[in-house]
Length: 340
Image (tube, rainbow, N blue to C red):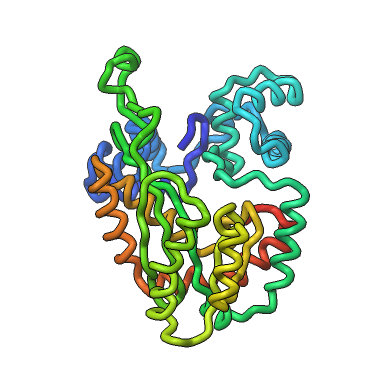
């Protein structure tokens, strides 16, 4: 409970009930996540008056009333990217009151709001948004069964992680410059490029290399990994191959190779990772890499292959089945980025 917040009657009743059962005040405070002084005052009032009700006018009055909190909530929702300092400056001018940053921080929590780190999404200009909308509208009538015939493919970059795990460290004010409290970073960490493909039927082949890729090299990857994966996963059934609009994918020699092989291609619009389920697979594997923290490139490659093979079939079916909902969200949000 924040400072100055009234204790609900139900919570006061629980405190008295546990006290009557012989539970110590310290254990009561710990179990109900209250301060020992709060529990002591409630029990002391019950001893003296035999009641748990609070006398009228007891306790410090809040600086911001319910009407002020509604105005604060509207302002925070309208300006979601504002800092607490900026909100405090606005509140002082709007309410004509002396307010501190801590007071505004507590008031924001009373408004049932909380400060979170914003999700990172690619920037979309008006042309890209329009193309996303048209692509989503053109494929909106596809059923889940048809999306399960798509062989999704993509590349991703994995880096060897250095330093301690996480962004937070426990310290005192005097220890903030202690070397053990620093988070180390490397300017150019060792990395690997990974190409993979997947469908609702299972995981396809994985190809790992160092450096960049061009059209000739991409065609070799398709011959050595995409074609065997398509035969193994679909077993002769018709399927659609998907890749994004990267330069090696849209090169003339790549397009000619796909046409000669009579491979039907589903091209996605640029800056649309939220429409491809394989992007969720990369996210899962990168989260596993942050947990396992491989120290060398060899360990990184082994971990990637192991986690790639451990993706369960129900997870793949769930991701592929979510594609129609993703398209509906694109149309609903007027071509903007989705939550996926």
